Amino acid sequence: MKDTLSAAVVLIGNELLSGSIQDKNLAHIAKELEVRGIRIRETRIIPDIESEIVEAVNHLRQKFDYVFTTGGIGPTHDDITSDSMAAAFGVNNVIQQTVFEQIDKRFKEKGIPFTKEAQRMAYAPQGSEIIASKHSIIPGYRIDNVFVMAGVPSIMRLMLEGVIEHLNTGLTIHNKAIHANVGEGEIAHPLGIIQDQHPNIDIGSYPQDKNSEFSDYRVIFMVKGTDLEEIQITCDKILAACKDRGHDAILA
Amino acid sequence: MKDTLSAAVVLIGNELLSGSIQDKNLAHIAKELEVRGIRIRETRIIPDIESEIVEAVNHLRQKFDYVFTTGGIGPTHDDITSDSMAAAFGVNNVIQQTVFEQIDKRFKEKGIPFTKEAQRMAYAPQGSEIIASKHSIIPGYRIDNVFVMAGVPSIMRLMLEGVIEHLNTGLTIHNKAIHANVGEGEIAHPLGIIQDQHPNIDIGSYPQDKNSEFSDYRVIFMVKGTDLEEIQITCDKILAACKDRGHDAILA
Figure 1 (cartoon, rainbow over the protein chains, first blue to last red):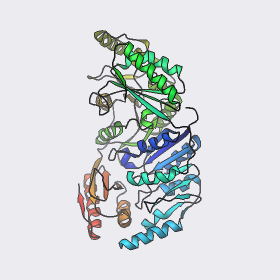
Figure 2 (figure 1 turned 90 degrees about the vertical axis):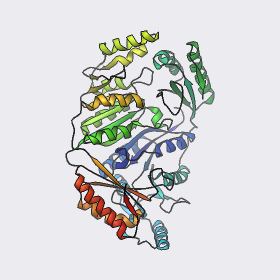
Figure 3 (figure 1 turned 90 degrees about the horizontal axis):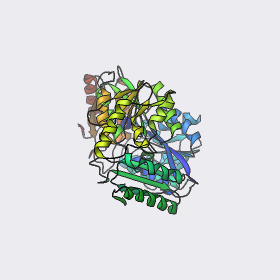
Figure 4 (figure 1 turned 135 degrees about the vertical axis):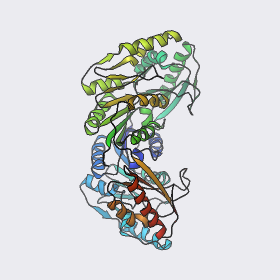
């Protein structure tokens, strides 16, 4: 897509792979980024294993403009993201004095011992830029083109507000959706022609479950691009193709 | 984890990356596999781009016992999974005569033209084993250790029922969850010791959002393994560690 930037997301945590916890961060990050002209081109969900984090981050940071990670920056034994990130960049994971003092103060107020394990939350790879948040004492950070955030959705969202200020932006990516009562097999041919006519527009076709929460219609077409006028022309053609074949279709 | 098999999942589709559609397949696949002793060790979400599908599948099928893909096997221009899978294995994507005849019959019954595009649903890479489903005329298939399924959740679930009969199994993976009102910073030290005492057990620690749908408690500990007795011993130790520090904790 013209004049957009690319990104990858790495969701770190065994719980996401085992179905115990349903990720809610990817969709939120994607929507915030698309407004700013940044498209997510790949997402990996990986376990809390250092070699896996190193491999994913080192591959993706060279391939895309930005990488965003979530998860693994707390104090417990399975929180190994910062150690792994330091390994990926070949630097030490070092104490961040200001962060340390903030967490220390908070723990003292609460009367909780600031153990060696809890102190790990104040570490980040050497050369990182801490991205402070008004709302969370544990900050996210940036190292080169990689942004490291928490896994808990409410904390991740607050961190992302700070992260966004550090990003270059492209042209805003717009979406329109068409809901249609046409079978994919019947519309595939004209849809392919329309896609070929508009290579800068991304047309997706998504058949719906009968009990879909999204639609009473059989298919949703998603029409994406940076040019609102071209999106509208594309939508008009898809609507006409459905109606020409006697099927109901609406711009959602 | 002892005596378990490994798997990767590849979720194919632009819509999943852009936040337009929330994946529901991964958690379902994970739960069905864990009962059968197969753990998902990596998941990739990738766009409808052949080179990306080829790269992901060829990497993952060598690294893990099984690979499961969802999405991209319909008739529209963005359905390129079977072509890509054929490219990954260096074979042709060929017509499956029985499947072709089934779909042709269904289309005739419905009075829909069986176009060239719709006919693509009857193709699979040379050497594939079609995995028939009682419920869907479009079957999933297996090629070597890779299983290809639909993206629409209701169809994927039906295909998975057939796929499961083709899998070797390991020891069933069991889960227990503890909900506790303890801060992660406070429990991290004893939790690390308990994890070290039970290397065959996988202890995850997941702080909860205040408005979590899962729990009124601050943290959920997930305790996983193949040995039910060792899981229980591990849970008892975690419960005791919470209670020793004056915090409420329950086995969920």
